Image 1 (cartoon, rainbow, N blue to C red):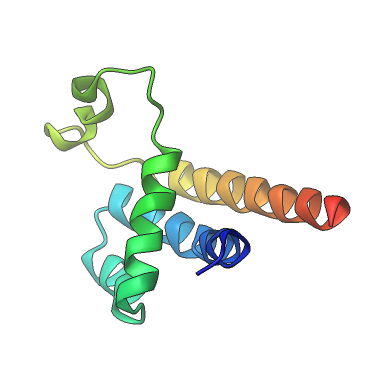
Image 2: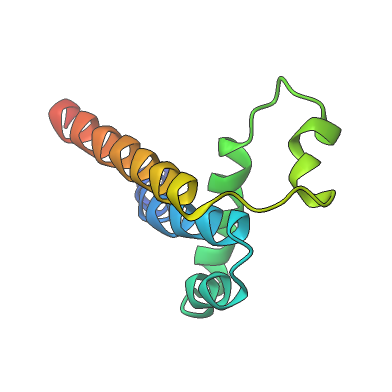
Length: 101
């Protein structure tokens, strides 16, 4: 697989990554399953790489994992705001790539 193919695969995994992030933070098992169920092995590996790239590397793991320590899920309003922000950023990134191409 060429670098261009890998870049295209990573680009295709941004939307599933966005959906999975929202589902995990909403603690929505069904939505998480739905994101992952339709992906093949290569796509799942690419999704892992994309998700790893999205994790900030300047924070302690304990800080990043605080949400797993009994913190309540975000409210429906907060979740909707977070999803909208992620989708807007994804749209901006795609538009920027199209301008460069």
